[in-house]
Length: 458
Ligand SMILES: Cc1cc2nc3c(=O)[nH]c(=O)nc-3n(C[C@H](O)[C@H](O)[C@H](O)COP(=O)(O)OP(=O)(O)OC[C@H]3O[C@@H](n4cnc5c(N)ncnc54)[C@H](O)[C@@H]3O)c2cc1C
Image (cartoon, rainbow, N blue to C red; front, side, top):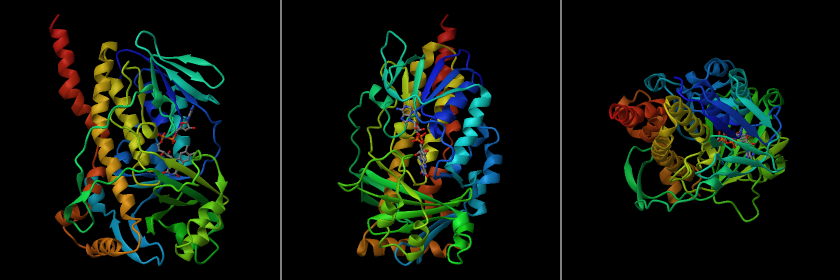
């Protein structure tokens, strides 16, 4: 769909959220300039999870499914192992019946392959991308268009600024924080034994995350490590106050590490700044020798601290700035939905603005954006933080209870749909979300009737 008017958008940040949003806005007839602080990275480390709620949006980005089929790993399931012993505790197998019901698969793709594809799509559709532009602040007022100012004093004016500048977003400063809405103290969530119970609300406390990437060429001649290079699973090694994830994609083996809260000496680095690999290895003392053996092959590690933010609104009062992706929320890196949340934001915003009929509709559309993304983001954050807590319980009765609950998932062979839904309900619900449907529903219920009413009044 093409917008009836063309606005000038500046997008800050050329990663998952920024490039996806830029492409969709340009395709719907707007004019887009992307500002990116880094010089184009040749081959950045890392691997991204593409769960079904993200995979089903990729038809909007030509050639992406083909690229995934060629370069990504089709994930066969999530497996939970005891970090110390490697004992299998539980698993969620992505059975064909479940995935075909969802209409999409779960992929794991190298960060570099995914970004390169989005980047090329943007360039071929006419998006302009300016590298080496370090945005310092965004000046927004109601009587003039917003201006992005760089560290060197360059000013760029636009009709609208999209902040896709990650977890240390400078764009976020243009959006005054609001009082968090008060929530109930108790939250209901599933644990994998299928019983729903009231549990103290998962605290969204700061999180320390890290990863190392190893070329599989360094592993394939070692008889112990070679099987890992063919692994199509997302493996979660449950630890004492932390967890390690392992995935294999695009000729790389990626180990991730998550713990919270960070310690006083933990440093908050940029994700693309390399730290010594030894700092990663130090964290793995309690983990199985196989995990440590792979980690020893890494040349460097990447660290970040994520601090949960006020997520009640994503747009500014002047209605000319929005934040999306990690700039807007705290979906834990290395978990299941960090990338899919960014893509959902980008698609929601881009697809919404393809429906624009006049400038007067912008405040209404932004209201719609806040509404659509607010509820969904909150649900995804709570699910992901609860998941991280679950896989890092220290030894003791709580961990034993978790392990026996996870153990029930080992006996689901031949289970009917109802049982599977009871056991994995929250996860499947998160996979089942469709960002395009959410926009269509909002548009039909709100924007279309209001537009028709405004026109019939004349
Ligand atoms: C190099 C790299 C590797 C990653 N690897 C992994 C991984 O292995 N696993 C994982 O779960 N997640 C990884 N991530 C994070 C993952 O991409 C995000 O959590 C998620 O996909 C949300 O993406 P995003 O676009 O909102 O934010 P990000 O991916 O963080 O992108 C933000 C972008 O904005 C740019 N930027 C930031 N500040 C400014 C500024 N002031 N001016 C201009 N540009 C700015 C950054 O350079 C970056 O390109 C990685 C991110 C990067 C940048």
